[in-house]
Image 1 (cartoon, rainbow, N blue to C red):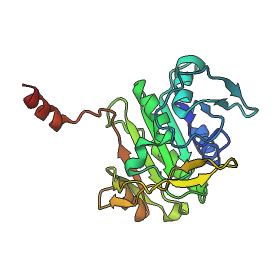
Image 2 (image 1 turned 90 degrees about the vertical axis):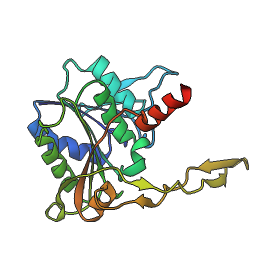
Image 3 (image 1 turned 45 degrees about the vertical axis):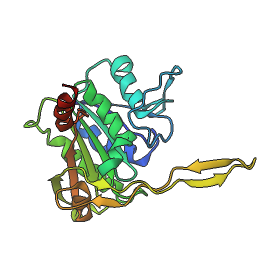
Length: 246
């Protein structure tokens, strides 16, 4: 198995290093192409207003001054001399569940691979701080080893892992995305010149965290695995729109 590995926390992030160490023994080849710094919240953005640079660190990892989507795009179209069997992103510092997936650079890196027709998996830890990161990496390896042959030829999975010792982590559950309330208000401050600046506020509280959601599964110690898709078409409203236009 040949793997392309990326993330959004940067090529030096503990989650990426732990995931590489866990996956390397089961991969025929594994190549890392990741951002040069933290790009959390960058979503699926591609950099189109300037050229991008790619460098190679002493450990062989490639790093790019772009977004997670840039990294995977450049890897697949300009760096790799092979077509990977799997694109893996993470392990992110902090959860990517519910509405978070729309903003997540971790999910975006996996999504870019999916858009190229490749199976892809995004991994995140529920809580920030990297506690029990080796346990999370061990779980991630087990998820990758499942191969998911019964799914379509290419799939997009969003995986969230509780920050627990390996022995305390409960088996994976197939889940749907939960929902959050609207985000909290921005935090206003002033720069040294006295001008107003704004920090994006905290994400909203959980609104739909019932049984079957990613929120519910991880809150009860399970690994959450949610299959994602890219089709944003609102099928029901499409039918209604056709009636309106007719």
